[in-house]
Image 1: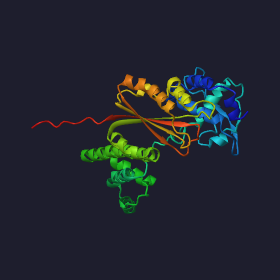
Image 2 (image 1 turned 120 degrees about the vertical axis):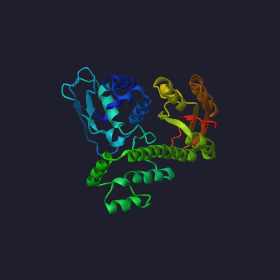
Image 3 (image 1 turned 180 degrees about the vertical axis):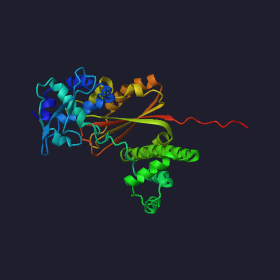
Length: 340
């Protein structure tokens, strides 16, 4: 039995219930919407590749207090190859098909659920803020280096140069950091905080760049709200209806049935902006706009958030699909200077 055959032999509801049993310690299991999207994509993916086998490492856990098994040979591989791999059931298999399918689904999504929701915590987008981040990262370590060649490289303003050290240099850096005085510790802390701030701005600037390709000039209205926000969260929902259901019905199910809006995380935000994108050939219809307003208005009112919609197109989207980027923001609190 191949991975795809295993997935199509069980329902997503069975896999979701199995994941809640076997992987309950993983926080991502509390929000099943992205798993639902991937499940439907896998069930509609044609095999292309060399295949292989999927085997399972079983743990000694008997009460599911920890993950009881791990699917091997699925992390980091192309999904179109993984769907054709042969599932090797464990000897004296104690697990159901749904539990094994859930383990494979969990492993296949380790690095992210889609191109829009890929996981790479160390990646900083290149651009104005990305370059500033890079320069500060270099400045952070300069006081601890004694290698003149390394110091010269760090001081160069080559945009494509990455911060990288030998093990020997890292050892010297950590040794120097352990013995730094108070003023140097404060300096290090200030630069670290600035780097963290610049990384946030770099990701927000990248988001605005992508949005501008889809919504055009309307992105100018969003720029101050996004760049100046005290905090921001972007929730992405992607329909995987494949023409078998209405795309908006699919998205509504993700949000209402599978916690696709992360309702518990919407607290303490003041603004909700929903960017709706479709293919250029099949733009958002008027009845879909009305349904979207009805879908989100109750949540916005409950949380006391303002709500607005922006519509655009993505040339890469199939005609039958729709993407939602739900942008939650809170403005910076104005600081009042004390009167003299």
